[in-house]
Image (cartoon, rainbow, N blue to C red; front, side):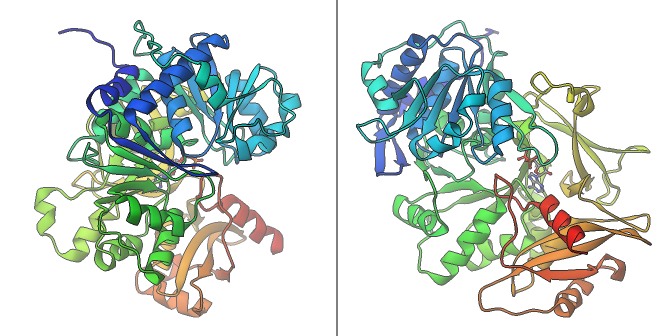
Length: 533
Ligand code: ADP
């Protein structure tokens, strides 16, 4: 067989050739753009030529500090197209971490959204490797800024070459993109994604037994393009010639609902907090969501009650997926096997609420102190993963040996695996609650509490305890106009859990702190509670 390399440029070339009139609809600060793949192709090539003119060399990193929009998409393809690496930067990192990731990745050029310039200006004196700043804006004039040298993306593109050829001698193992973990503890860890990994990951996203992304879809990635390749969707949607809807800066749940209705979005993906927000809005307003054929949810556990509300009340198919920065990210996807489709409704939703089976080409197992765990849905162990889009090290980081051992990624997630092969994330090792020598899953409790009709959001954390070592405490946000007491929450939980699982305390809050990618920030909650005691 031929050994044609699996690289990124052919993905865009396919869209240019076969789907030149399909659209990328992109919301920016000033307006909504409608570009075709023909336009995107020309602009990406022009950007590639500009990056080369600016002295970017093969293997060097280009950083992006940007929301989900067409210019970010162009950078996703232009950097790898010239053999460079697109480093997506999480602008919500602390200033110290921001400086750390930019210097550690040795970014040479930074592409920055106009409204995010202050984020970089605040740390510019500490950046040691960046030689050029480019601002992403619709405006003709350069905005006021202390960054130097600063160029306007659009003026550079005007001078670029829209026919610029992408490199032909790319090796599929070369890095194409890079993302740092969002660091709940310690410094962020860098993960490099190869051309090959991204291509294979995109292929699997198109399989009918996984997400089945196709040319028919109108794909709206809500998951940020600064986080794990926006779950690979910008790559795969372009590859398949799907219409893309990029929601841009500072979107609200209302705006997402409007985009779904107006653009007839069929496929979207994001973390549970996004979908909890959308639910609030669509249950009040009158939005037409009938175009949606798949809402993909991952990043933290999707509560079963949320999956049921989407499917039963809104008639919107809702899918649970699992992955992490180190895994590109798709590892598993929850979809009923043919024989499960005849199961009782309750059993079907129980399967749908798991994180599902490994997708093709991914191998996984659970391991504890006794060796590999049984696939019985009961025994718990740490999830180990391997496959062609799983990282095998962190970028220049001596913490690599801890996570990558014996050919497996050690995820730090505790799972059970059932007879059908569905994994269930019980907890992150560090969030499991150790009570009197037994384990309590904070995730199970949270998801159950979010099933209570008065509850909007819940997070359960371990709080140190003299006698039991640790005990669960629940932090709960109620829905507008609803009431519930600690006793009511615990009575509700007592229907599902043993008594010793019930939280020692239920603290009602106006909102839960979130991580930079929208997950509940449990470490902060735990610190707050411990301090207050
Ligand atoms: P961070 O480490 O900053 O949270 P990642 O996005 O890489 O960044 O997070 C990956 C982690 O998120 C996984 O290790 C797992 O704990 C959690 N996670 C991802 N998807 C799911 C899911 N569907 N259900 C439960 N947990 C999930």
